[in-house]
Length: 342
Length: 255
Image 1 (cartoon, rainbow over the protein chains, first blue to last red):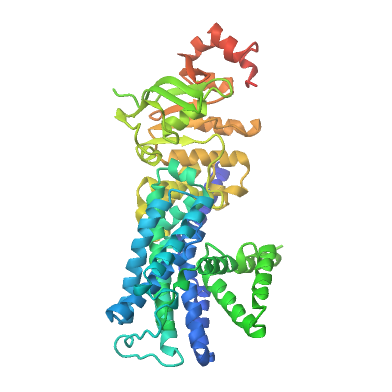
Image 2: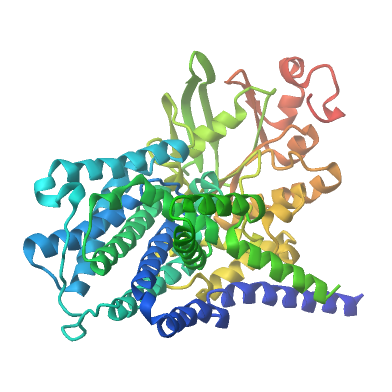
């Protein structure tokens, strides 16, 4: 009797330790997480003539990452995320065209602040709602901002946009080359910084609370969580990041038009994220990259029917990869792990 | 001494239908109170009014002497009012351990922190494991809640409420939906609750009610029908007629 008591006590101790270990280790950096960054650097050397396209992919990765924070983690559904992308894009666009403020890095900060403020104000009002209501209200916000820009086309340039923007050399030293090498590294650096922030947030207690809100908001209220405050906080952060992505978009393209506020843009980033996998950080990387590479490939293959290819891919994803491409990888990993130890 | 929980003249209607009518109720510190009544008597509505999930049309709620009628649900929870739900409300896609850590994190305000990693607080994890230990859930710590059988999920529901370190605990049919072979586990836990916590339990099983409660409130059609000790309620002819019906009270569930 006594002996078995002792073994059961040590067993429980071991079980406890294993359980604790899981949470203690979870936020540690894993080697596989190096992969997307190594690929991004590899692309720089392998496809030196496709750097402009590469920069656009990185911009969309950042945009999708900001959506992952609110959609994937906090479970906020939105069809108006382009609003913040657009605010950021126009912040640096207008600053350069109207105020001759062309320093790129401070432009990113300005874009983050401007988009963050709009995110905070709209979030404060809209995040009392959920589901379809929220979907419609976020969509309306983006359209209203777009129409405001259209109304004051004397400032915004309307649908003709602000063409031919020029920006100061990066850090006052690195000028922009025709092939976009500098831009690519600049965008990659910005993405790395943003990703570090997002990753910290996701693994913080605050990030845990966001998943709690996604999983069961009634329970969150019952355990005393200030749900509205949490949602507004993360919405503001995601808006600021989307603003940075928008600012990078304007800087890499050297022009911006009101189409950045389009519903298309909000929908596209959501499709990318879902395609890659929500609530997983790296879903944004895979989704944006796969979507944009395929879009590029299909449009060259058939300039008239390229959207058919995208549509087919989405149907396949919905039928066979409900948790996105990353979900497929996870399933495969689980399958092989099971086969190893029958 | 101020009462742990005091409810004064609560009223609430859904449209034209009054579901809570002038209900007053007092729970002293460490009280063991049961709320019984036929289906549709407004028991869960009363719990929702007390926790703030619903707003009353009139009446007031005091927690440890403070008027919390205008407070939000989350604010009441932070002041020490915890509840379990009649139907599980859990973070089904998260592990059992995460469910507990989340509760402790919100209780202690860690969840305001965006920067430090959740896993860096060994104390929180240890406390969560202690709570799981006391309900014998340690082996399930790393399982997703949705993978657990319903009876175990009910225990997680209680574990979360206890991890809030409440001063007042409202248990809405803690053993509902649990096969009788497992319900004793839950009822043992309920019986062994900290004697300092004031507990209000809604329960249909009269055996449990008469064993657990020191006072019983009978709710009929939204109003307090009568209040008293188990003995008084058991011998009250009107209660027997209205609620316990013809069957012997030991006959178990009202149906």
